[in-house]
Length: 258
Image (cartoon, rainbow, N blue to C red):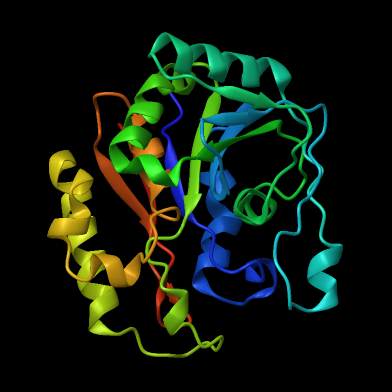
């Protein structure tokens, strides 16, 4: 079984940054079995229905602006997997969740940034799944649960978002001290994950300290709920990495299941 994982992808510049999160991702592939394919759920693709891309080869989407020219030269031409895309739609349908297919879309930076660092050869097929911000954590947990069989089929489910994501406090420089409102939220969420308090996690916006400050909108945390659900009934969480960039972006990563 390939345990589903959640990764914090940080800024698009992560491949160029000398930070602990990048170094963690560089060693990730060596720490797990090689998947036959990757299904990645990115915070940067929002649709009305869960949607998967079904392409022969993934284009690299540079869905950002204002960065150095070399960032726009990066490419991650991983093959797609239309058969896996069909399987995802079928699994969601079996769970009563309507889903759609996109036959043109490539990978946005929430998908290709962490994958480029972890699997730089771009030789593992990748399929991307969208999020539905308007439907909240419970919906994404159910999406993940529907996809649980994939872990036994050689598919690595990767939720890609950010453990904290208040860009209004981001000043773009390294070395900033992490404020308490970030650490208090991250500590609460880590305890809830490791203690398997799923009901509390679903109600995190009411229970976690400074939840709305760390996540003014939810799209960067929703991929975590998909990865959590994809572990099936065994929601045991193992923290793989914890660090902070720019003071306010927690880059924590988790694996789910045993």
